[in-house]
Length: 72
Image 1 (cartoon, helix red, strand yellow):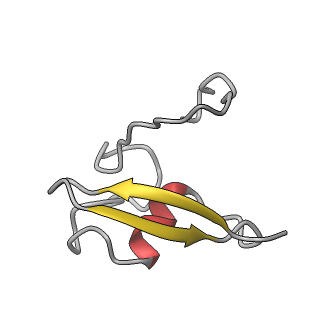
Image 2 (cartoon, rainbow, N blue to C red; image 1 turned 180 degrees about the vertical axis):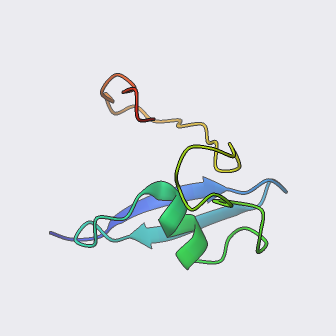
């Protein structure tokens, strides 16, 4: 599978168009961290355990998305 292009607007309003891998089973928080788009210690502080709410995001897309699950 190929990478997908996504646009991330950071907390300062700066837009970043990046290639997100589809073959590495990464969630969006991990992609943001791998591109270093957030200052160290400001996103994913709990390591993605859904305990700190530091990696909240808004999805703006015309694609139909599945309903949010309990683990989200």
